[in-house]
Picture (tube, rainbow, N blue to C red):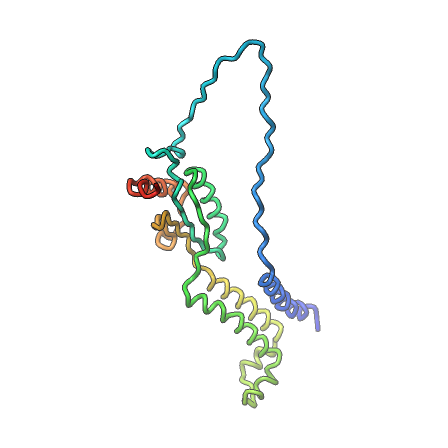
Length: 229
């Protein structure tokens, strides 16, 4: 057995062990946010009596409060449903931080948007088909007589002629199909149950300013403000 055959044989075994390890390994705990320690401000010693200080409240556009006295984000929920297998999590986290900063008190929830049921079912069938094809390549000469086929078909001999390449190709193609079937390509944003942006309909991601304006218009509607109190 030369070096190329050893590599082709070891690659599927390594990928299979890696998938098993990732399947049974629990997810790491979420790190707790740590606030940097800030030393107290230094107040220089003054000989004369300081004048009375009257604090002034700055009016930021993103922190305007409603006429009922609370920040417009309180009592409202924004849910961002995105495709986890499509690596959209970074974009979703960025949007959540932006919305929490623009609308203090707003509850932003991140959740996975699953693919349709047929694709989920096929994604579960692919690993079984992978192992079946690999098992057939390895021990097909004993499996076919057990199921009543005395002479194996021609395609079996073609796969058996280059068994290591066939096993590696089967594993790689199966992983690609499984990843494709598990992806939904979605990035859907709901505000209090109302859809405000859909990547499935628009075919693109929302801009940060665009999403902030859409959420702001939804929160400042008279009916929305009245329903939060």
